[in-house]
Image (cartoon, rainbow, N blue to C red; front, side, top):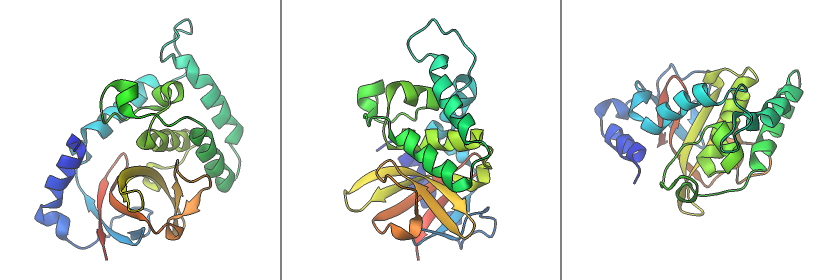
Length: 215
């Protein structure tokens, strides 16, 4: 069990987490995969999340010494050039293209990449090293932020895949009265309503995190 999951399970036992859905749930509809959401106050308990946001600000920038080969900032050039081609396109095309671009990378476990079972990679690391499910979701998140999407429209969702019986992570994007899912296991961008085998545990963005509980 990772430290983040332990923190989550501890928080889940707090009385505040057992309340009704908060009316301040941003632009997202009240349900995700058929589960209600309850907003929580402090994202700081998620160590990996805080660290990946900090590394994104430090590493995911185009400047740098292009003579280096390992985790070179110049590996971002293709990514940033790709994102520039999407500016001004429709929301549908942007989401589909970002999903397809990230999903073209190979799936590699954190233990093989970084020697640890749980490492959340920023875009520069993912584009060079490939990665696992949360790394796909994070690069999609950072891509959409670069394209001007609001943080309130985007969430990383940590969930249980009840078919495979394994934890998983996806990017959720608010879309009017729907939530669209960008998933490395699904080629197309789909509505959360079409997926019946995902049980969300928690979701998080730059400002808040949410517990998800069955109706």
